[in-house]
Image (tube, rainbow, N blue to C red):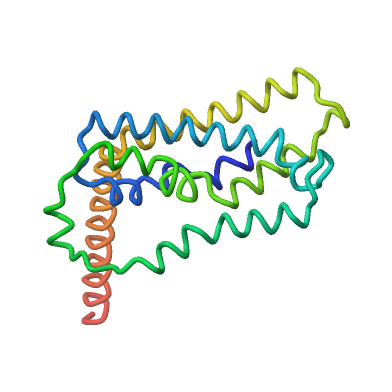
Length: 199
């Protein structure tokens, strides 16, 4: 499960999450973060334990038809996005009422899939479920370890999105401090070089 966490990368997704949920209250963001974490946990668990069987066709699914259905399902959101005209300006978007129900309807798509647990995360989860080190049979320690790992990733998703504003604020302060220190060092280096040149 260690390979799955950097691909999910909840900390790296916090700026995008803040942009997509700007204007939402803290309580609404907490509910939304909880829903996204639960959805992500379900996707990861299903991909780990069932994804391999669905892809290989060992449980009655034909791999060719499964690939066709998966491709058709993935093309629906893209087609809807391309067909819908984008006429809302930034000012109109700022004046749009922020209803928590509208954001909750987006908890699965696009906030969970593909923003948080995307195709790469699902592919890694399927690989983790396929490459079992305990042999061909599922054993309770292995199942418990995989479930605990998926739960820890879901908790990290919830905490990252729940405190997204605080994380972004602290990162911004840190970046400003690094930038100012770099500017001071560069200016001191320039002054030293000028003094050496005059000598």
